[in-house]
Length: 385
Image 1 (tube, rainbow, N blue to C red):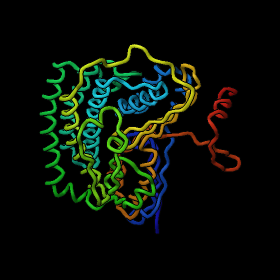
Image 2: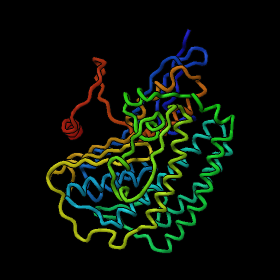
Image 3: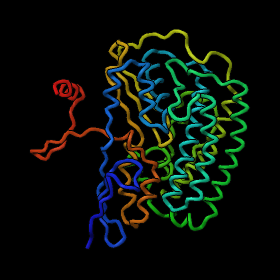
């Protein structure tokens, strides 16, 4: 006989609001349903009410840990509407901050993952050492979370020779942290037993669910926008795309660990080859009437921005497809047949972000029917309310 265990939407184990209904037989998960949608903020609609410049700061606030990711993708999409490219020095600075933020994100994830496994010593260690990454961002941008580095046609702050020396010093420390992290992963037999052959997502299922980022690469799907469709200065740096074949939690852990090494190497190349020149354009053309689409490799996977311009200083439509939208769909498949105690680390292994995921569903209570409607109709309904 099976029973359903509800978890959430508000629960001490959840960092963000979500609702799990897991059907278990004994300690084994045999079915369930995952529900999201508790944190909708209407950012896509709000973006059409603000100017393109103001929307940069709005895009940053889609996700705090991915703010450079979102602002870079937004700016490059608007720059496509303007038929311009940022100066080369700005592209390199975007790349440096992009990979610095990836280091911060992955180290944060490793800390959370260790906490979910009950390994709080490693959790505290990794979050302490993560401060070195935060100090890099603070010295370059003047901030630690919403960095405000990007602008249309370039970046707002330059990197001086003194800052380059500071970044190199911090990278020396961080590379030792990465080395110690590797020892924790590879030499702790208890830790490996908790994540090896747990939460398996086959390559076929990964492709079926269209998962992206470390979730896809941990299942043997060799994709990475930085290599496959380069942006910023990624075409000018050398790096490897880590891929693991087993598809379990350990594989997703190893992909992120190897990405820490690659990110440090990309930053070193970028600061070594940082070109001279301006960091932004003095004059910007007006966005042309039309549509533009750009994508970047966020820390969780491929992030897409679509913007439609009507020739004014405000976009007519902004559409954001963050990686968690597709990655979340694979969770139940990973959990089926696993022990209930392994659900937290399986959930954490895709590094879900619910704040940048949630969307509105229109529910017809009378007919018990769910549907979506065009944003134009939604806007009229909101205006008439």
